[in-house]
Length: 502
Image 1 (tube, rainbow, N blue to C red):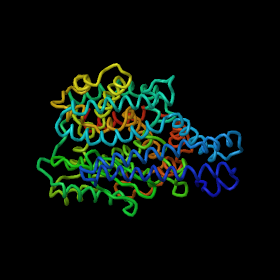
Image 2: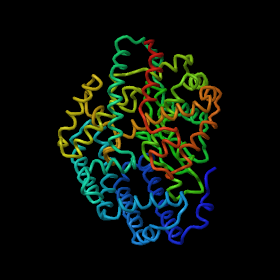
Image 3: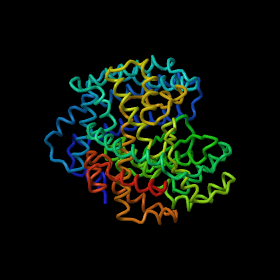
Image 4: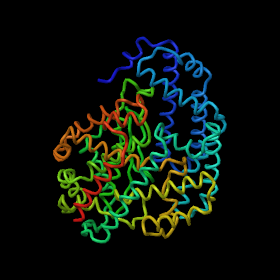
């Protein structure tokens, strides 16, 4: 059973209590900014951006001032040699890391970066709509320069790209991720080639058009089937699906393609996985590192687990196919739906629509371009052509325009060095899947629509620890082993070998 705040703080030094009070106020501001960002993406009219960018900039500046307040440094100094419990020591470790990464960054730079990012979202969206990379390029270059400047303030002796990567992936070395990329290149390329050359044809039964209203109702039904807590969440649409929230309010978004209704279900299930993490965090620890998610990669493991190891399984469709047919006016059997959502599309242009295997080459090419741009090896004007070259190299397809090429992702409007976390999440999801199946009959639970035991397992192993453990420690706590790509490779070969009759 998790230790409560009351238990862990009963003998805490005064400086620890003061540090926690300060941190809670900081968290409340950060989470308030998250709701403002949600509104920007979901509800705000287009004309609201001039004010919204100023609001987000002001919130970022106030948050930064609170995070770098001299009192925080004094509290941390006072606790340097204090006798702390394991949980208290973890809290101090995390807050010390945050403080040291923020204290030397000028507040006006934080405000400028936040305002530029907010404006960049609309610039990106407009550029994508017009398939005009040149319209976004100056903003992208400015964001890169601001992020490099911030990284230099954090650690001038380290590669700015590595510093940016560490923002979302604390304690997990970039070299570890590069090794995973190497393994996936080695193992997935021949598997995809075998599927292309000798695999059976899988069905594509949805050849009509399906209105957004019907797809929204179907996605709502999918969330109800999974057990999404409506008292602590909601579903909306956004240009790029995302989740934002806390353990009390975790909101998800999706988007629709009129010709691919099950794609929206998978997108919604993916974001539900993110929400399950937020809603599984300790409520009594809200406002402290013990009530926060560990990292972007661990977060992505939850979305990929629910999307791929639950939502793309045969038991899921054996249970959910009748509901899908009711909403879509179709008559497709469960086996066909299962095969349909697992088809491999090597010539697919869009990352968020990619299958489980080719998805990682979308990530690898982005990470390579991302790093080359941040480190100054390529200029902004080279990105579209390089993107197309790498799409042809890795996936055998060239985007016909920038909207379906280098402008398709929202990520560069907010930062860099984050794409790796998607592959880390997929790899960790497969490792968690192997571990949970040692304890639970997952297929039977999914077939019966009994998701509580699955959530409870994830809550105990992944969610409730919050940031008590460093990332590698959390992975070992949850699975009993260090992070490895072996489980993903084994899973992929078995699943797609069976599906494609290899």
